[in-house]
Image (cartoon, rainbow, N blue to C red; front, side, top):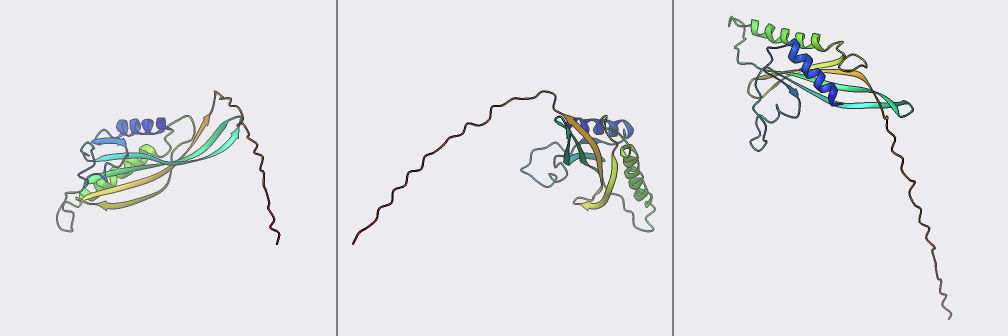
Length: 171
């Protein structure tokens, strides 16, 4: 399933060249405040991609079709003073435009030969250090077939003979 992530990362890098970091999400954002976690510095804006789970169903002859869940997090450091009257409220629209551009790059994109990415939900939240996160959740149909079959012997059975002895006491 790593092909999905690699193809999505490439798609984002090609359609959004102004993004500083496009990578698999392995907790880089959460590591910002952790001194004991060794990771490279996260530069902004960043897009972090993860595949959270896939639910599979059998379609016959060792083939399976699944629904994979993909999360794309656009991470932006917000050092602009955007209060009313500041004259810099356009920074809010610039961030929203970037989130919209990310969605347009992903919605309908086919990372494999199977189905397209379809957005299911989104959420937006703030993080420490003035960071804003635009999180998009997508599903995509995937399939996988096992081409080589591994033949294994059935497990050996062991039969145990249980011997019990009962002693009776006579009085």
